[in-house]
Image (tube, rainbow, N blue to C red):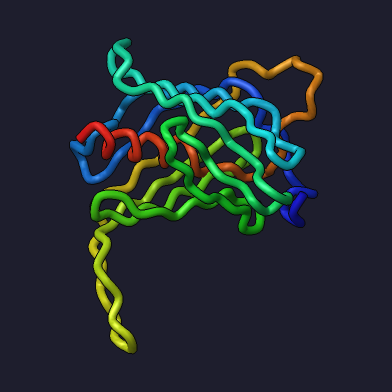
Length: 182
């Protein structure tokens, strides 16, 4: 486990919260979210459940059945969307971070635990090409913020998901899912 992993807390369980999205009117604003997280992948080649369900007025708008996986070694982590898509993630201090590009946008998703609240923030920007020795401005498209409380905890006897801050995946895949369906 990485150095960050040694101070991690338990994220395993079912989390529930509400999504905030800005600017006003951005898709997903006010949606109820449920995130189910399985036991932390402790061994090479292992994966755990990472399922997100997003509802608006009781109607399911999006379901993401993903897996959080460990490749070769404790720092080789990624999300697998089941359709061949893999997105690398890493611990930076106590924040799970996942930057990626998709369909002309650059996304940075981060997830962390603050006391008993699991927070996720996704920043979506344009994907302007860089120019050597020139500062290139990038405009932000939107920001999605999700705060969740644990509703239930796994009692599977397996080692629990560990990390004191896990703020990346639910919003990250919320926006990723919208892009796939756009």
